[in-house]
Length: 252
Ligand SMILES: NC(=O)c1ccc[n+]([C@@H]2O[C@H](COP(=O)([O-])OP(=O)(O)OC[C@H]3O[C@@H](n4cnc5c(N)ncnc54)[C@H](OP(=O)(O)O)[C@@H]3O)[C@@H](O)[C@H]2O)c1
Image (cartoon, rainbow, N blue to C red; front, side):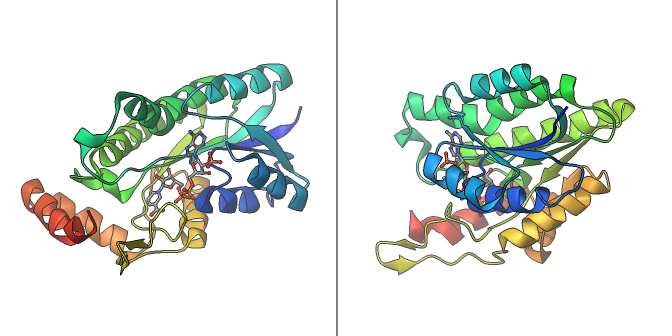
């Protein structure tokens, strides 16, 4: 039985790094790299013999694609990394209903269903990593759905980690602040956008894998994210939200 890790959002900055690092693990035979961009998935596979390409759109029928693979191959799932995510910065009232549905599917429904589908194939010592965000530490106006969906993922992860302790399966929630990936626009109307405390994908992924190995429920990489986590606990939410709006309004 193949020992498998499943990584969603494998074509992106953080996901590709997860694939690279996890494929070095001696107890993993295959890394199922999922995403929509077939060209990028094939490039990952041609550079790494453990990578299995899984083209799956998690906004639509992608969970069914992965479900079918799991049912057919019946792997020993050692690790599931729910990393795929979408972000939208702007007014919520400009979002259309189909965009809202796809957003919830990718950020909430897909990770939840994939865990449910993977659990029957996971054994003691298996690991789940969910990539949420420091946006889950407080509500972020104009990033409204993003921060709300990441709160869902964080609370789901933490509660599930406790539920799964009796099976020896850990759930670790990674909550980075800004990360240097293609998700972040670099300029708006010719103005360079600054991302204070931005960290590298290496830092996020290496910390998440260390925290997962140690069975920790939270993984918060870098000084800025840790500072912000404490600051947003101690400061009234209305003040944190106003400061956030002040910081981003020139980019809206
Ligand atoms: N960058 C940051 O500042 C930051 C900070 C905190 C948390 N995060 C979180 O980190 C995770 C990875 O993001 P990233 O920064 O690496 O961004 P990225 O480079 O844009 O990667 C996003 C990944 O999600 C996948 N994805 C998006 N929509 C999808 C869909 N409908 N179906 C399947 N896959 C889909 C993309 O794959 P395809 O394009 O191939 O579909 C891509 O692999 C996300 O959950 C994000 O919220 C990022």
